[in-house]
Image 1 (cartoon, rainbow, N blue to C red):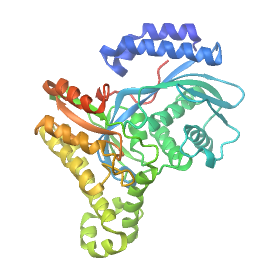
Image 2: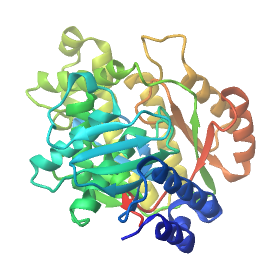
Image 3: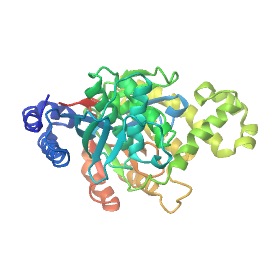
Image 4: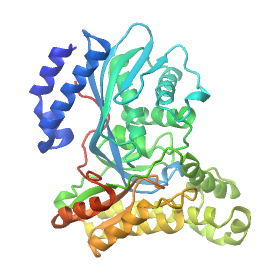
Length: 424
């Protein structure tokens, strides 16, 4: 148990924790970040006798673009950008979350029904998470929290999933003695986003943030996903993971995201199935004429993307496991092309003048000249691209991409070995 003074002492005396989470070069900066967060918590809520620190990372989707929501396979990794919370339990049953730069959210744990006015707002994620804990018979209660994040909103690194996992990790740590598994916390987070926030996402983002490291996930049984750790270091293969933020805004694109799982599931329903994982590629190809008539070409193309992307995930996991990084890179480029041509999530039809991802892919291709790999990252439509850049080209890549998209937009990231955790 910590108060503000002893919590600061723990931060300063435990460099190894920060080196593991953020990398050796980032220890001092992160310690300063944590200290400032503690001070700000005290400014808002006053001194507390019982204080804790929690962290949940952003994630990078390595393989499996828009496959999770139809019970497909993915490969993803947690990264060294995160949202942290200084938190203290309260006895009044009220959850208060003050996030840096935003108004405070207040949720009464005795009033957890969804509210229409909270759709697409962070408060819905808090309420939904607490409600699911209660439905599952887990302990809940009030707490005060101050959060800061460097997982930029709309960055393609899943800031919403990190926030959801953080709230679940706080409730787990304060009221459940850390007994809840990372998998269940991820499932609770997905519930909050689906049922309360109003976004029909799959489970990949939350799982990658909650579990940590590089993992492959098979969602065939969505209630019991098969998770496999993938032990690989991109730096040892001579490449850096560069996430390029094109500056696109996801705020008004929920309908674009929602159309992808909806169209995929409509194709599945044609065959009497709920999700595309239950349909084969051969079945879809054999039924192309009637599928086109019934659902249109875009839905068909998205279904074809799902089938091939699902196969590609297994191929990429195999390539990394066997140390064949060149094959992994080739498959990564194939994944990006499939997303562009067939999944069609590189830009939004409702905003045709905003095609930052397309431009970023062109620039990456012109710089890399056949080396490394580049692809749309995450949900798409705005946001980011994922680039595997040879180490001898990183400086050039960063300079040229930031000349177009702005200083600080090219994030050179490391894979973080841990997911959502109680730091102290």
